[in-house]
Length: 549
Image 1 (tube, rainbow, N blue to C red):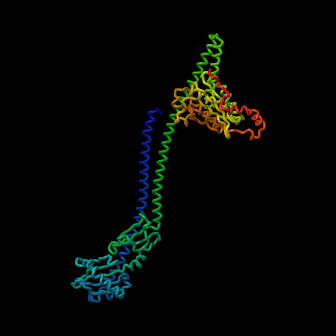
Image 2: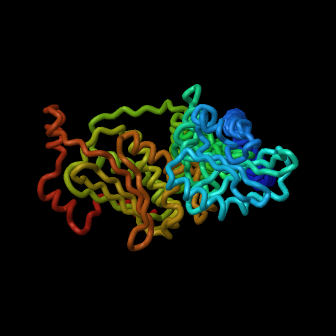
Image 3: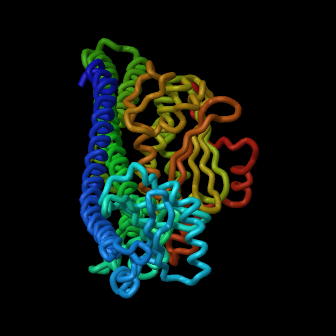
């Protein structure tokens, strides 16, 4: 994918997918919420049917009592109108506590009460002073049953009344229902759950509970209906006993749905982002591989051209000066070593990419290994006009290591030091510490930009400051892999006095604790005497100096 197409995908595809997933998540949440509301609505409708049935039963009970009272009235003798009712009042209408007959002037013609004398007097006072004015008797049609449900002096009153015509005279019949009796006796009978799965309660117009349990915990699952004609100031409410659990589960379900949708959206967006990131990384890696192939081709072409040119000159015997012949042979040898080192790097990197590179760890003195690597590189130092100094600090650098791999790593570090700080002194230090052995290669060049310190060991990566410097971009990657294969590490830093220092650290191996007496003996024989160690630790640590060419 070329740069323009990738930018188009990155700029438009990811936002489009993000918007699409958000829209999909939104409508998914709405659909889930609608299904939940449908379930709640179905439950509410079934509860509403139950509420209506209960309300109708109470209405019919009160109206039946009214019919019993008013049906027993004898207006032939208005002063004794409720004589028959009084004999069977407990049986016919147990909720009615008082019955009255009023004439057209609102005078009480007859009154019968099933209460104490004190309560009767109190009722009559409230009835005549407050209730009668609210009945609006003048406009009342004949034989139409009406009810008044209202609170007077802090007490709830239910009054049933109707207008009748008898022998051309207008009378008013009224019955007082004891709401306390309704609450204590009638409500428990009528509102008893037949299945044991519902709660009932009755509340007034101020939502104060009159009867039954508190249904606040039922949430949206409470269904209520007012009594239409009798106790119309009160409302019957029904809720399933599982309502608190359903309410809690509903809230949890909504939260879980939202969390699940959000998580799904996040996963989709992360997956898309990861795909775009992987695509971008693959694109950059492909470009780096292309640069790597171009760089390696150039690196191979240069020494081959030099070898071919000087080889042809020597073969045609056009060089008669022996000193020149010797110089050309040394150049051919130097370029051959350079070519060999590059090929070794490429082969090692290819084996590393395939996961087939193995290392043979043997007992070795890393100081000697580094010294041999410097000697192998001396032609390059001479050609570049650079100088190398080797310092050994501490005890003998014994470790289990692959000598060939360590040599390759040191040569790569030396090659980097010469390339990026041409003509400067390269300082190589082998220091034996308590737990590990450090091989440090320092140059005195421009150093490494801080932003590149963490990336210089990436494969194919080349610092922008060295973009025009030849190289394949795999040298330090091999160094890091070799260090990790030896259970060590590689680190790049900028030196305080200028230049860069790259450290290769290998875990130290103490031969005296291995139990191998032959190896320990060889280690003791190779350890320099005290005077030599003093010279190694002296302020002038130079052991090997490769002079300028």
